[in-house]
Length: 218
Length: 218
Figure 1: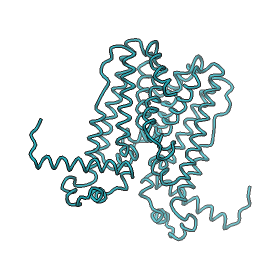
Figure 2: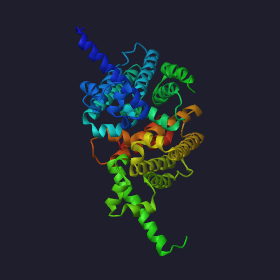
Figure 3: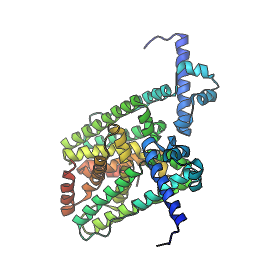
Figure 4: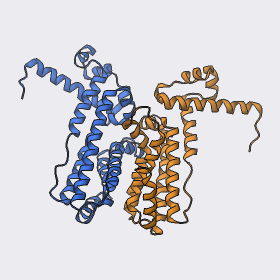
């Protein structure tokens, strides 16, 4: 733990306030229609004070991406058996989708954001690469203990589909659902849809365990 | 066929020119950064002349959506056997993904577009509903002839995943691939990824036929 003097503490608190308010406004109104001036006004802060902490909106977005990446930086541990591997995957998907929901402005205009900010694009892709590797690893370990039957090619395609559905599920729901509907159920439904990608490759106890979990969502 | 006088013909040609140029610019630069003034200049047309044909950008977007919807308005016919059902689905997916690629600006900021234009949102959802029904119908007919083994619940979840992957595949590729890479291969890869969603539910000849087609993409 690093020692903080009073000034550093105050700086940290202000940065946190700016980031929390920016996240709220970006999610609510879309990042493109929120200026730094608007954020400052919303916090009752002078633009100069905000500028002291973040030189522009891009710095705020990158700091928020850092927090998002930290939230996403969890992985299911090595499973002791097929049933607990399925439970871990289920919980893991909920955590991921909840993080995406919390930072949903990043996903709303992912293309635009990535097109105008190469650093953000690279960081997002590093995160996606990591997640792809996690899914492949998990499938390999399920295949090794006989709980999954899938070829290397099938696992590669499956991992890619898991990534596409997990990445865009909440966008899809926002488009298809009623505007302003509560999102809690969408996270559960998203986890269910991803599990449905994996399900047909599962065998024996793993499959039964998944079917029991899935029954709650049908 | 309706008879057209010279004036109506000229009007039709101008509308077509405006729509073709708008589509090109929207796809290239993103719809948000292209104004009607910019479209007029790019065509060497006065803003007043463009305004005579389309009162605002939203009208241009809606007209383009109409053309997109017409392109999407094809469906695989009733299949005579499992192998031809798989070939039809394969071709169908290519047609759909090519249409999405051609009108990709609609998909780049789908959320924003749908949020600000309720009519467009409703039309997009009607299209998605139709596509969902087509996939369910196709799976049901494959199941009926023994080429697919899947429960009603599995088919419902599968159809939803087919829709998510097909809708967002090109966005995902744009994000993950190198900027400016050719998109032709992405359409084929997208069709392959969607077929991989269906594959584990196929049995017998249908499965073998799909595996043979898929081998070209692995």
